[in-house]
Length: 425
Ligand code: AMP
Image (cartoon, rainbow, N blue to C red; front, side, top):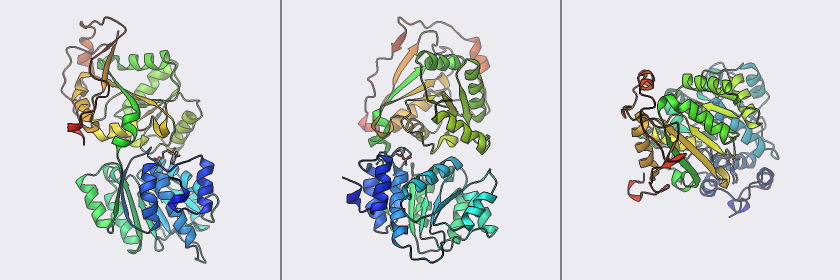
């Protein structure tokens, strides 16, 4: 299967081959022909599947095909939950439209609106936006959504998680009812289905599920460890393994800051990326990470959504997410485009129930290894921590109480990544 056989035009094929893509990914093979036919799409796909090109390429093809308009107006709108994702989708749109007469812009909050407004005023065909800033600028009269032909909702589940439902509903009222809708979501809750039902018109359903993408090719491992020893362990793993470009996930913004400081004191260049950081600080951290100046990027789930960092060798879960699907998003940062990757989770007693939930979701059990000197706390409770509750002080009293290993590492003896077909999602 080639990109050409999907029916895309020459200027787009040229841009695709410039990017070095040889074959369309499964989501691209499934989605592109239907989008070119003008159908609405409901796609189950997460970052790492090639979903961005999956909607951008046919969108650009269609816009270029019908570019009879005398004055430029915004004809395609891509809504994304985060500024990072907006910036990355925009970067993709720019690259794929290099050989077309298509202009695009990106708008998101947290930065000065003036340059954004100026770009829009010059005339654009494609707008990539986060909902808040879009509504702001529309209500100021800085842009019109009356000529939208194609609407894309990217990471729709995350938009709902972030409380954008009302904003999405407002946007729907501002755009023409006759249009093509493309909705992408990694998960399908009741709310997402409801939103899809209200927006989409007889959609073609397309799937690129974790089962046939990320999860199977990623080498996953759990280190059972006492909560108080996690920082020491992560520093040891990164330093002794000489790991470069490590993405670390924490559950909270404070946790991300704390861990970043400790790594920096241990001589590891690290930066945190989360919602409390300014846009400038986030862009700088990401750029430093991409060009190798920053060895470790510590991120929260929301901030990391949509980060486009190809071929990441190591992802570490400093804490497991309490939402199992987030685990799949996190480890999807590694092992993409066929390269092998490693995802390591540091799991303390109170996270055992999260681990069980994750194993059930991915349909496999994850190997457990215990590193000597970083054993789990035998007295710690296996009850999950509730929000606002901090048990680490009590746990530190029970440190080093027993548990010996024969070698440097110890395997739990469970089958490596064994699939349990009965518990598939
Ligand atoms: P996405 O899921 O859209 O975030 O894309 C994930 C990564 O895969 C990005 O770095 C893309 O540049 C890359 N990619 C997208 N489509 C292809 C393809 N057909 N072949 C190789 N890499 C691709």
